[in-house]
Length: 277
Ligand code: KIV
Ligand code: NA
Image (cartoon, rainbow, N blue to C red; front, side, top):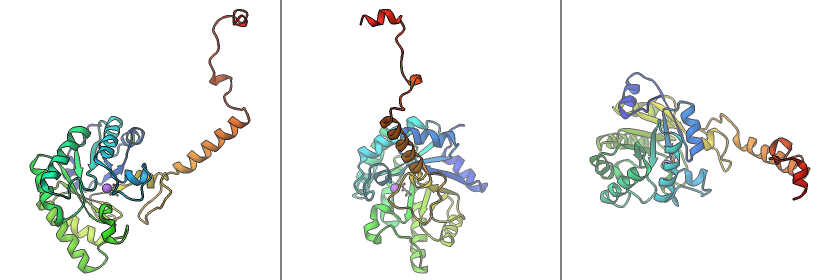
């Protein structure tokens, strides 16, 4: 299939055709997503947890993100890919944000960059957009500032905080973002935002009434065992399959059941000649 563009995503919003979006961090996962006809891939800084084993996303660097984006692009050349700008690559100033987003796009070959925050990052969104780069906003549960939120906690649970989220959503669109991700927010709030904004609004843990869904591959495929958020549906159990496969291999190696004749190379000359070796 042909790679989609932001125009396709705008069209899909109008037609109420939902976007299926998943994270990937490496070549094989990206190629699986593309084979499954995923509309979009996110190379999230959740790679810090899912593939690098950190407790959160704060330690993830530009180099980490860029190298994982490159691997994903090689695995999914025909899929619209969004890459996360890591912590401290855009917060400092709009100038630093453009410089890093520009470097990121040049080296990673992503179609868009995503950054976290509402009104406090609108100058950054505007500056990056002015440079000609597609920006995806991200509000609600924002993992890079989870310390301020007191952990990975759902947001917008009170009317007052929901109002703040709606103001953030509007500000992100006005700053020039071409799509918005809403994380861990009640569906009522997501629905309000989706109807209010012209740009597509996507949910991770923010319910059905929006323009599409995102899940983390490690969660939905059962690869990430540290914790599973309430909003995850598990569609496969790769960890279980992998451990079972490894256990079987260990057993067969110990029992000398592996390798068998079909797994080895045989000498091509006569055995007589070989005996002189
Ligand atoms: O890094 C990521 O995968 C994300 C999702 C949690 C939304 O930003
Ligand atoms: Na992220």
